[in-house]
Amino acid sequence: DTVLTQSPALAVSPGERVTISCRASESVSTLMHWYQQKPGQQPKLLIYLASHLESGVPARFSGSGSGTDFTLTIDPVEADDTATYYCQQSWNDPWTFGGGTKLELK
Amino acid sequence: QIQLVQSGPELKKPGESLKISCKASGYTFTDYAMQWVKQAPGKGLQYMGWINTQTGKPTYADDFKERFVFSLETSASTAYLQINNLKNEDTATYFCARWDIFFDYWGQGVMVTVSS
Image 1 (tube, rainbow over the protein chains, first blue to last red):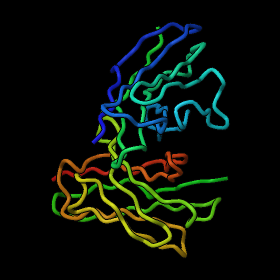
Image 2: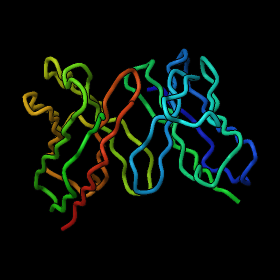
Image 3: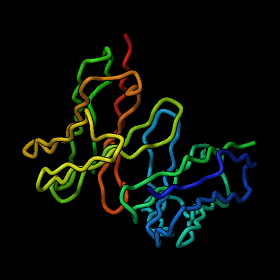
Image 4: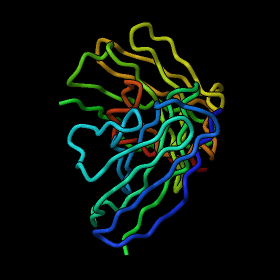
């Protein structure tokens, strides 16, 4: 199975720029997607196909990457962005998720 | 608007079975596959598998080939997840999610607690 590796946690101040990384154990082309999950809620799609912003998601969110290395950027970070962020690949069956990056605001 | 509405929380004993539902609305049910995702308490997301809403054919990830059954009631635009012979490690929240190369819409999740 394709393993997706994320840093477990980050802490940033409001107004700063934050990058969340996701590294795949093998190429997933650009079939990488990003989700935001707040406590007690279902995940929410933010970015699909590595760099496409889902409708209704603020333009502060952006994604980049291809192959094995991907990045989710939030610029500027707002207090409401406190959440866990997951990457997920759909190139290799079975689909897999990263372990999640918990974003905290200072 | 597109919605996936799941059934309510469950409290079960080891060895029992349960069946949770996921009712879709706002789109043509058979146009998109339905996927299932498990989230154990305090843990990340784990892909369980999917069901083809046109044919009813289920596909299970390796960890979910035993005891787990995906099914449909197409006339009611509803997908089901059945878990047989429940174990303590099945304690988790189970999400259904619509599939379009990515998970674009999610149900609110069903919290399942297995305890004697």
